[in-house]
Image 1 (cartoon, rainbow, N blue to C red):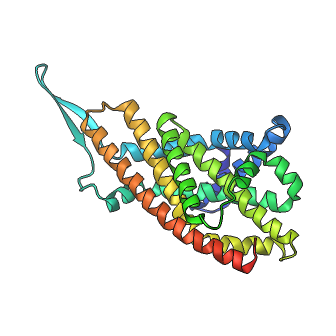
Image 2 (cartoon, helix red, strand yellow; image 1 turned 180 degrees about the horizontal axis):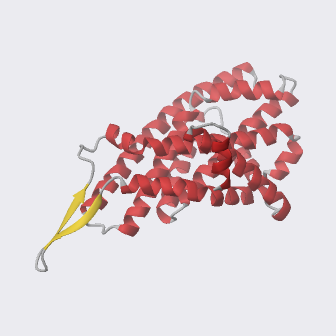
Image 3 (cartoon, one colour; image 1 turned 45 degrees about the vertical axis):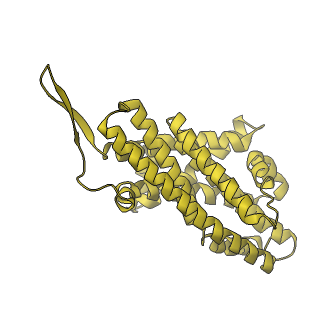
Length: 292
């Protein structure tokens, strides 16, 4: 791939930064192409193009993660067939499941950050009116998240749980649903944080870039937990999708993969609950500081 060769030519040897790099570049190319070809729905078209570009990068890692859970082979005679599962010999626990898939979490995180910061940068540079036209679909989501102060915790928890479950089911139903959900969330978050910074600037609170930096620092107290929760549910759905297409539901290997998926989903739900509790506290702090 051309981008991979260009990245390694810079002298950087980190795979993590490579995924951040392609996330940013794919976003620039996706937005630019959407402006030229899909001028009526740029934001959504950009998500589609970015997902299309990232699929080959992400899916091969997900496939590798699924294959590492074990391989099957038939043993026996023409009369009696048995199935042997060749896999890593360890008890399936939350820690072992995370160790088996931690590389995927890292890849998703850096790809996510590259896309998110690209959308944030463009939204910060452009006037609010132009960025709202450019990322119309993202702005619709942002405007739809006006939580009431009285039910803030419940509203955010229900909303985020719906996003998590949507990511799970899309990843199960569609082979590349995992990538789409990650890209979509990154574009929405990137736009939302930049809009919050721009609006505070319009209210003469401060420079939008400085305000954005402060917001990101505050948001990073819960963002890694929330993002990891979505990654966990998407990985769980992606693993199940591949297992259902490659394995018999009654096979030993399918049960191993399903167990990983259930643990990942439970892990994601715990992370989501933790992120919501922190997020509510941060929102109250932001309100008190009049940053938004």
